[in-house]
Length: 421
Image (cartoon, rainbow, N blue to C red; front, top):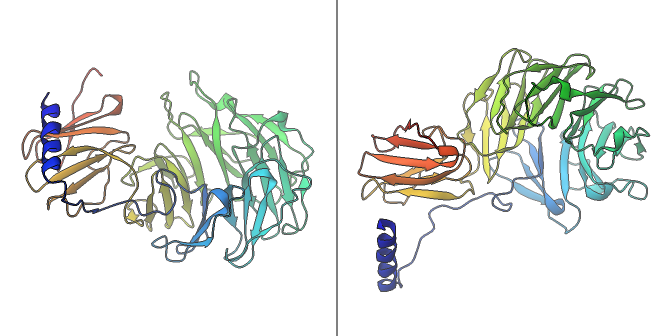
């Protein structure tokens, strides 16, 4: 009833003052559609990186993500789904319908080199071993290899049980590699001779008993034999023999949570991410959970070395680190996620809560300026739907999965309230 009365009053005020204008103080600044991240990204060093998206759009940064320029406009053609660079100039991208693109000038120009006369299945992942040797994996058990920089391609004769090879592909070198399917069942295959032969490994057997799903979503490689696979229930698997056998490392959960991304720096340092971000620097013996300031889903995690890395999360959340993920810097002016809750502790203070990642933003000057939204105070990783204040100090935030937290200091800190929901 109180909200209905307030809404009636607000509408009445609007009716009396319809000539007044609204001023936009913040809006999402990433160029792609709000709510959608790039399909893939690749960083060559701490400054230089590329993003690919639908219809062949390519963006590039040369200042560590502070600014992005579109170096290839979308052409209404195939959606580009993965990209990786062998050098600062030579890179490859794969797309739907068997399209493969190559650049030799740092992304300024791209040439379609795919053999679409013979191979037309959607390609989902690629692994660049060198400027000349690249592997591509995709739908309908398609696995392609070029050994001459895209001048020609060969397709593996192995049938991969008819599965789509859409979970990922990664090679330690030209010979040792693993490809996976994200179908429920833990499908993985390894090769030790450059793809001439493949051997099936059922990694579902490494999932804890009672887990609902055994889907795996990404694979990474390092050194000469190290393979890391990650998937549902935060399960992470480590192989030290090129994908033949695995050990489960790190924590897992019976909740329906998952990791979508693995990024490998070397045999000791790698990152797994999805609904959260974790790092190991001792080869999986222990993991640290890293707080970027957002609970949005991770789209890209790419570290150029153990210290310098980038993460892209849903709704235009971009951050960069130079200390291995201990601290993060925003590199996009403002994200594009939705604010669903608003609280007014006093006449000058405005508090907004965000959808999808537990973020909060505060204005101390009546809404003219706002702090960069993060979830470091709310300690929430999910949806926050409501923000209400009784007075200048006492307020509540509420969200998904029974989330309820209270502040008694005007939003400086929040404490969880246990409830039966």
